[in-house]
Each structure stands twice: as C-alpha cells, then as structure tokens.
Image 1 (cartoon, rainbow over the protein chains, first blue to last red):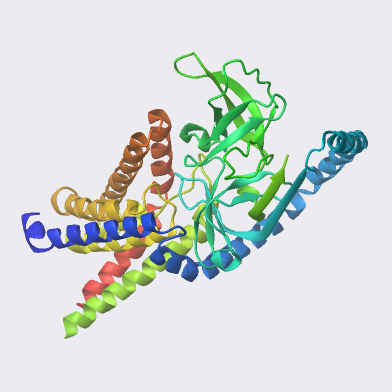
Image 2 (image 1 turned 135 degrees about the vertical axis):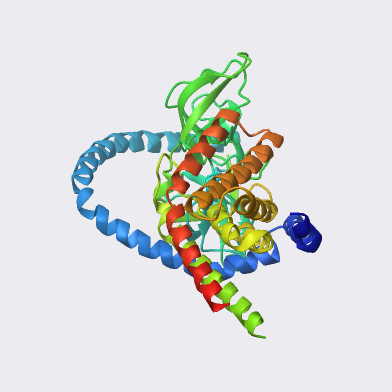
Length: 279
Length: 170
C-alpha cells in the first residue's frame, strides 16, 4: 500500500479530484448540460434508441397474446366510461356557454390554454435504482430547455426536464427525490407542494406536503399543478390521493399520491416548450 | 516496445469486455426487475477488474468508468461515480492482495464492498440534502446488492479469461 501511494496513489487521487471538480464546475455553470455530458449523450443516443427499440419489440411480441383477455375487459370498461363522460360533456358544454356569458358580463379576459408541444420518444428509462428518470430523443436542436414540463398524450404530468443536450434530454419524473412542484387539490383548491420522497420512489408514488392545516383530503382527490410562480403551467394532472398521513411530529398532515401516469410503460411523451394560460 | 504493445492490447481487451458488459447492462439487466430493483453492474466491474489487476490499474479503471458513468447516468452530484469508483477499485485490489486470494469468492466480497461504498456515498448525499430515510436507504442498498451479486459470475468469468489471456501474452 505504501508503494502504491508513493508511486501512483497521489496521481490517481489528483486526477480524480481534477476531473470531479471539472465535472462539477461544467455542470454548475451550464444552463443545459456540460459539454462533456452533451458529447456523451450525442454519442450514446443512437445506441440507446437502438436497444430500446429492440427490447420494446421483443416485449410487444411477448405480451401480444397475453394481453388479449385484459384488452377485452378494458374495452368493456372503457365503453361504460365513455357513456358516463358523454353525460359530463353535455353538462360541461352548458357550463362553458354560461361561463362565456358571465365573463362577457363581467368584462373578463377569455380563458385560454395555449401550449407549444414537441413530441419525443423515450430512449431510456432509469439507469440507476437511486433516481427516477427518462432520457428522450429531443434536445436543444428542437428548442427544449431545462425546466420544461413533460406530459403524456392524456395531459398527465410525467416530469420536468433536468438536463438537455443537442439531441437528447433527461427528465426527472414526478416521483424522483429532486422533483418539487407547486400543487393544488382540484376539489378544494388548497395549495401544497408535490415532491418526490425516497421511501415512496420505489413504489412509484410521491408526497403532497405543506398543506394548510384545515385541509380535508379524501382518497381519490385529484392533484394538479398550481402554476404559481409561472415556472410550470397550471392544471396539469399530477396524480390522485392514495392515503392521508400525519407527519412524524403529528401536527401536520401530508398525502401520498399515485401518479396518473405509468412511468415504466411510457414510450412517447410531449414536452411543453412554452405556454400561455389565462384562468 | 513489446511490453508496451502488450499493455495496449490488454487495455483494448478490457475496454471491449467492459463495452460488452455495458451492453448487457443496458439491453438486458435494466429490464430485469427483481425485488423492485434492477441489477447495477458498474461497481462489480470495478471490483472484479481491481481484484485481478491490482491497485493502480484498479483505481485508474475505476476513474475512467466513473467519469463515463457520470456523463451518462443521472446521479445526485455531477462527480459522484468519479469520486467513489477509484476508491472502490483501490480497496478491492487491497482485499485481494492482503486478505483473500483472487478468485470467485474474492470477487464476490469485493463487489459487495464496492456496493457498500457506492451506496454509503448515496446515503451520505441524501442525508446531507435532507431527502433520505435511513430505513429506505438500507433496504434499497440490501436489495440492490443482493440482486446484483447474482450477476457477478459472468463478470468474473469474462475478466478472469481476459486476465489469463493477457498474462499469457506477456
């Protein structure tokens, strides 16, 4: 050991320190990703796309017959759901017309939700058990930026772009410990913070914290983004309340949320590049 | 001159072996979820390599693999693997030189040690940022180590054959 430290140990230690500091500085001073990480992402993107394509193809073939029965049942359930929703749509149309009339009476600006989307394919799911992330095949060449929200075709929030390179970007999903979003309880309008929790991440769930003390949450309550601060659009569906718990001190409550999106099975998503919302 | 060529050939062989195992990790292992986690081979690669090649080569290999991992895998800090893999390589080599003779059992122990170091570093960062829950961290560490140790055998067989081939070449 003495010989090693004398001959090479300090050099290896020095090299590790220099590279570590360089990586940290490059990452800190870059608003997208460090040049080295960008290069690594560009080089590995075709391989990631390739092996994701092959493994998805194999998985599809495997599950084709297995899923048939489940699809029949799902089809039946969806038909019932469509019938319910058609009734709700009719009611909503009447409500919208009333809303327009009232807004005109009060001289309010017309509500609108304009999003500028970019569709993207998932080329890699989490590459570590300690984070929950996705790699997508779109980057700065399509005007993707850090903190852009990523949603599914149904409008359910998947996560937020954390790093972006030329033709790739990394998305931290809603259950990752580094994710923290302003959230609103759809039914009551109460505001809180939806954030990833390490002990819940393995179960693909997250936490809704910092709620007002008088909040009365029910299982199944829908949680959406609050849009406060203007960083993220409002009204994106994060998930629904699974259970309500008290924190360790027993003074405040928090909710455990199940995201509406099944992160493991995602293959295509939409990145919100810009938005203009008037509520 | 001849020894330099042999050294270059050795590193090329190990590089190809590592690339093959990276493909295995990304193509296959990331899809195999056991006990809620998938096997994570990189700490095992560093440990097994260092067991056969000694502290200097082990630390250098750990450094290179660590940089590559930091550039391609999401980690809690930008230089996470760059810092921990050289240390894991160095300690694994010391284990084989001073405690257990290089072989499958040594590789298994060194891999477990490498995982403990990596996950302890994860735990430290999570604790410092206030995001960690000790029970959850320990559970994840135990599950990840147990699941990955099942896959030490292919890494051991590949690196042992490369080591023997390179030694014969010398």
